[in-house]
Image 1 (tube, rainbow, N blue to C red):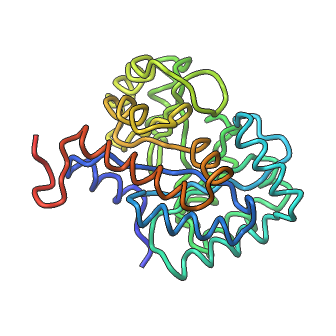
Image 2: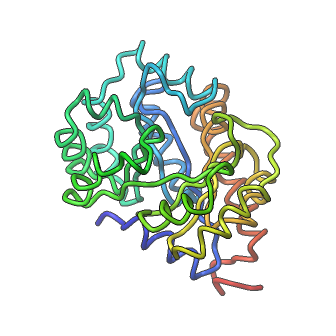
Length: 273
């Protein structure tokens, strides 16, 4: 049975365990590798998998994810094939799945058709980084009808009023962007987004996940001080490129271990500090 996204992250929060959300581009380097990587990441301790649908103009993504999307498209990736990928994952896994894409892709495919097809395939949530809160009703009713959480984003530049408005509409988890740049591994002072998260927590109890910039166990541990979960993307694709699924497996295992050490979580007692 498919696991509910928000219940999964709320359960982790209650147990003292930090959530690990991992990103991968559908069809990079091919769909078989994507499927193998998703199953490997789940086995090594990932809690949620975010699957990016290749798009020609991914404005929120840095060079690593842009390159992966470009190569996936050149290799023949399509929305229909990505829907089939979700179905293949669902045959073997109940892990929460979130699709990340851009609004033009959804409109071009047909909004109701797109969301219904991915929902039927087995996704739990949808991230559309270029859809501002003011335009979210465009997809919100369809997502609600299909049982798909429409994930909202906040950033260090979000004003207090905007943080409250976004938080109150948040579903699944709140995606907290760590900095004003695009995705990609780098050193980041997470205290800046930490203060934004503190403001958001005044408006909602929904789990908070920090993304953008996290590429190592140490980086994940630093971000996890401020959030309930961390999101790792570019580093996963870099490992997939250079070391294949084996490299991805090793990276996820090391981040999982570091997060558990940082939070004092252990399987037997669920919480030791």
